[in-house]
Structures are given as C-alpha cells and as structure tokens.
Amino acid sequence: MSLFPYKEILEMIKKYDTIIVHRHMRPDPDALGSQGGLVEILKESFPKKRIIKAGGPVGDLDFLITMDEVNDDDYKGSLVIVTDTANTPRISDERYKLGSMLIKIDHHPNDDIYGDVQLVNINASSCSEIIADFYLANQDELTLPKEAARLLYAGIVGDTGRFLYPSTTPHTMRIAAKLMENDFIPNEVNNQMNVVSQKVAKLTGYILQNLTISEVGVAKILLTQEILNTFNVTDMETSSIVSIPGTIDGVLVWGIFVEQTEGHFRCRLRSKGPIINEVAKRHHGGGHPLASGANARNKEEIDQIVEELTDLASKWLNE
Image 1: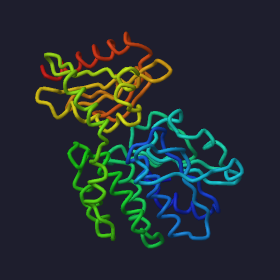
Image 2: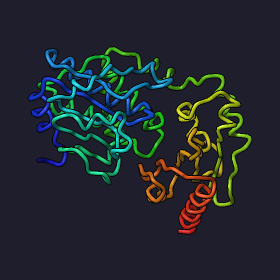
Image 3: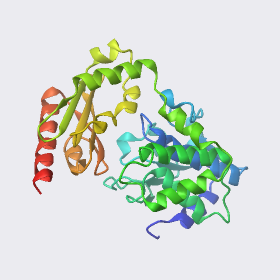
Image 4: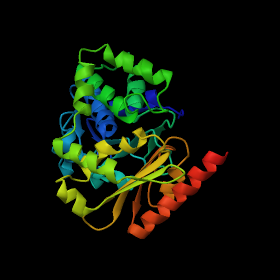
C-alpha cells in the first residue's frame, strides 16, 4: 500500500454498506471539518450507503455541524474511519473498536499507529486538507457537494489560524481556492468562526490582564474552575482564546492551563519557534511541533512544564 493510499481507501469504502466516521473528543473546526466533509462527500457519491457521523455534542461549533445518533448495531460489519485524531485515547466514542475495519486519517505525528490502514500526512496544514486531497485524487469517482466544501474550508481556516500559521503552504492555498469555487460563502464561514460570546470576550480581558511573561518570552495563564465559573465559561469554550497570547509582542512560547472538574489541568501549548511537542509527549500529550496539548496532574506539574518550555525558549534564543 502506498504512503498516501487515496485510491486504496476508496476501494475499501466501496466494499462497505455502512461507514461510520469519528473524530477526536472536544472537537475543533478541523476535527468537524474533516469528519463532516468526508461524510458529505461519501453521502453525495454513494447515496445507497449509510454514512454516519459519530462523536457526541460539539459545543458552540454547532453552526458547522452536529452529530448523528449511532447505535451499537450500526457498527456490525461497518467500516470505521477516524479523522484528525493522533492517538486512540482521544477518539470520541470508544465504539470505534466495534467496526470490521478501521482507517486512520490524520496530520499529526504518527506516534500511535492504530487502525488497519493509515493515511497520515504530517506536512498537511490540517486533516481537512487531506480529505480535500483524497477527493481530488479520486474526483473521477467522487462528488464534492457545497456542504463538504464549506466544512473542509472551515477546517483549513481553523487549523491554519486563518492562514497565519507556518503550516500554511502554497498547496494549502490552492486547496482553499479550489474549495471556494463551490457555492458557499467563505466570508460567512470566516465571520462565524471569528465571533465569540460576550462571556468569552470578558475572559479574554482577564487573560490579557493576568498573563505572566518571562524574560525569555514564555507566557502562562492559569484558568481554575473558580475563574471559569466566574465567567460562566466551559473548558471547550476556552479553545477560542488559545491564540491570544501569541499576539503580544515579546511572547515566544505560551501555555494556557485549564483546570478540569476532576482536578487535573488541560494544557494548551503554542510556540512561534521552539519545538514543543516533545514537552507535550512527556506530559501525557502530543501534537504538532508548534501547537500541542498535554495534561498536568496538578500545579506542580504545570510549573515543571513551564520550566521545560523556558529551557527550550532560552536555547532557541541563544542559537
């Protein structure tokens, strides 16, 4: 099987009457864009097949897409495809294991090689870009409906930070342009993704006032359950503020540490240069070189993560 088995995956899809597409828990636009975009392509191309989206609630991203109801019986003899999910613990809905065959489609480093077939392109800006490539490689047999184009475009916009991140390539822009040829309104998608609620806007003000920045440009903000409750904001809603520290002059690396109801902390880590995903891996996480996620048991482990980020930033500045 080839490195990018677009044709082979299409042949597998043709063999199954039921196809269930999963993505990662606590979805972002790329998770929903790649999942939903693939589902819409397959529905339009194979109207007699049953194509299902699995994964539960999507929070305030329901303007993009919502999930289907999935029963255990649906998995019998099915093909399961998981998009935008680096490792199995992050797959939303553990029933992905119940299918007859499993395909992984992703753009994160392939540290957890799960599934019967993997289509992993770490050079892609997003998983939505990979799904668009899958369509283009098979466009003689597949159809790209307007809704699929809208979702894939939203996924690319989300994971490239509106085309600002280094992962944006000329190929990314060509894919986005191709998607924009369909009859959806790109600026409507952009505007929907830019809007934040008033409570998140107020939380943004708190972050700007309380962010600490070290001499080497490592920024840190701790969002405890008390703070989240004060602003009536959920963990999922904090995803829209991850890029804010990076807009501040002098910030090189940053972490947003969000306390979970169970007491541990979700760590959203970002960088403008130093490679941070190895730090994330050491703390029950992983991700891209400049955008990763981790988990900290307590504030002491957060301090350890910040210390490791500080060492990285110092070395990077002195190179």
